Amino acid sequence: MKSDQEREAHKRFLKALQHEHLTCTKPGCGGAMEVVDHTLHSARIKTYEAACEQCHTVEHITGKETHQPAWDVASITLMAESHLLHDQPTCPFDETPITFVSLHNPRRRARYRLLCYYCGRHAEMNWPPPEAKR
Ligand SMILES: [Zn+2]
Ligand SMILES: [Zn+2]
Image (cartoon, rainbow, N blue to C red; front, side, top):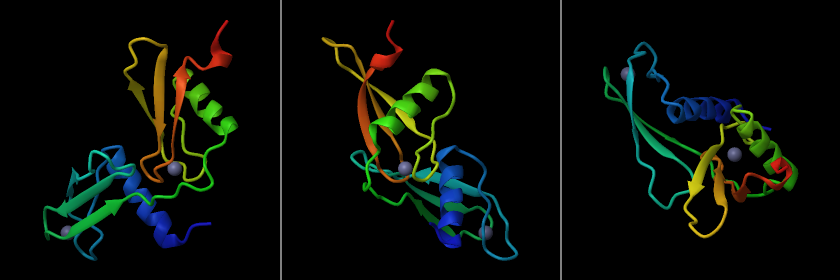
């Protein structure tokens, strides 16, 4: 489904997303990279700029926005359930860890937004999900 190049780019994206150590890919360098988050406030996908502290190579690391096909109800429920169990749910399309954002909603129940910062897919749901109620 993905080319080697895409797979590699996704791996580097995950490291940036999870604040893991990135090393320069330039042959013979392997220097540590400083990663800065350049994501625009309204953006659905994350954009990073990594700069090698050794050779000053700049690498742009971004998600790949894809909205189709959208998440179906079953996969949204599955993600919510693993979040409830304190597991890290991942996007069923690209295996990127999902981010849960609490939405302020003073008059109603808690609402959460689920986001995949790689593909930009997102969903909103009431919290706790109906099936978790007694
Ligand atoms: Zn370098
Ligand atoms: Zn995704």
